[in-house]
Length: 114
Image (cartoon, rainbow, N blue to C red; front, side, top):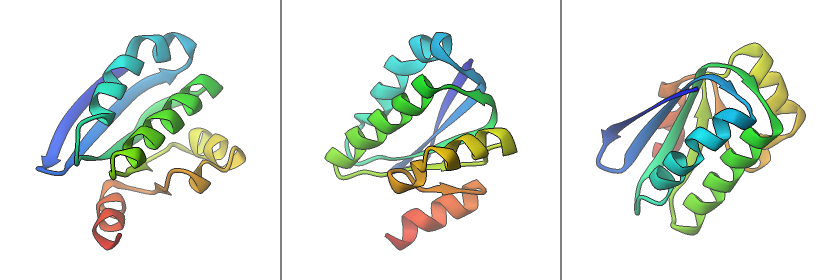
């Protein structure tokens, strides 16, 4: 699992994940994700376009980070999920907690409207 964080503007970070988001990957990236999630005043877009597998621990990690952001007045939006990963996200109804959209443009637009 590879992770890349970029700052899109002063209030929005983008986290790009690549590979399998399984138990091993969660152990490797959770600390870094949490560090990004605690940045005060920064919304977080999570690019899932290069994630080819999503385990339950990965889902838990995303939900935990989203709740941490919400507690700080910030938001998380997931985007770009491949069909298999998108199906998993739909199955667990993660969109009840974290918005899921098709691409980065839609994710940024969603942040702009809230």
